[in-house]
Image 1 (cartoon, one colour):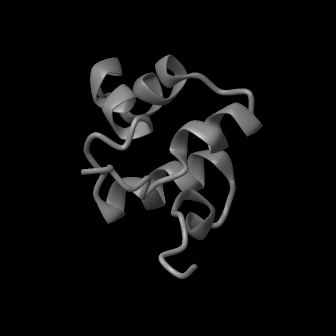
Image 2: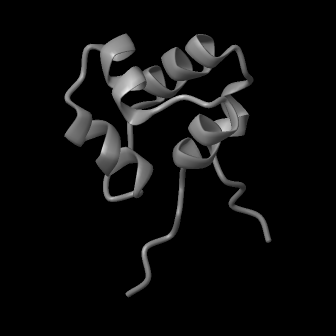
Length: 69
């Protein structure tokens, strides 16, 4: 079964020249957690996505892939 890429976190971090380590420090989370989010192995909560969008000064919608094709 293919895993659907729900979030765009890895791409958005790269676009903003930020690293997983930077995000982990900002959110006071483990780097492994951030890595799992970036690979879409697990998903951050909506509250966390909002916090990330505020850190990057972007709309939270930029962090989520559309479910429409």
